[in-house]
Image 1 (cartoon, rainbow, N blue to C red):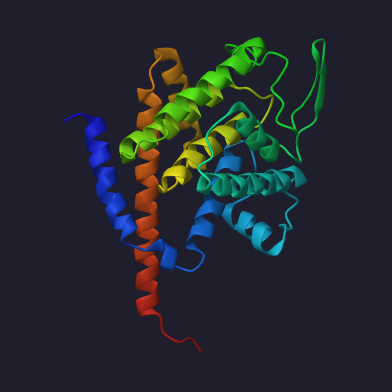
Image 2 (tube, helix red, strand yellow; image 1 turned 180 degrees about the horizontal axis):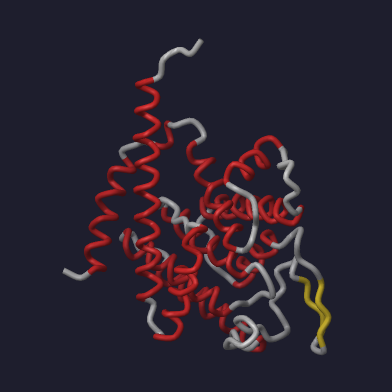
Length: 273
């Protein structure tokens, strides 16, 4: 049996256990799970905020006393607004369009974006405008898609997603979300916020299907980037799909373990004086 079939069998087993937790009956579970996804997504982009920092910021408006950059707080607040918008649109079954993706990116970059002036004109990264200049992977790496091809590339991606959006098979829906993530970040339509917006698009497709959201763990950033590079170089979605399936399985098992520990502590608790 292939590793692909093995891991999806494991995911199905753990997903059933996870679903049996009835997380909707646990106070604020879904809210804090979303906070964790946001904190990990921004951490991949360099944010110094922990999940606890993010929770205190979102719920109480409290910032830490250790001098973390204000941009890190703004990044997290903006991503929270973007997720809230995405959740609402997923309930409305909104299809993917270039304008919809621009809207997601504009929310992601609302407070940290800026205007750029080029020989071809100006664009504003806080408004979801596509870039009008070239972008490389690092100083010596390959270039992303030519800026002149971005509008057509994004429209083609949106059309392909919408063709597959009606699938009711769990594995197919997750793979669609992973493929959408990979393709959007590979096109790199914006000057900034591509990673956060691509992860949000992935989660949007999962919201759309009522699936458990996939989280990319900050500690796995290097493996995440490697999987993106491997899929691009091999011109195959499989390396990235395999990485994402493993991340999803890791998340399910972490959540199940946390629940078991919490239940045990609750059972064993005694009054302290």
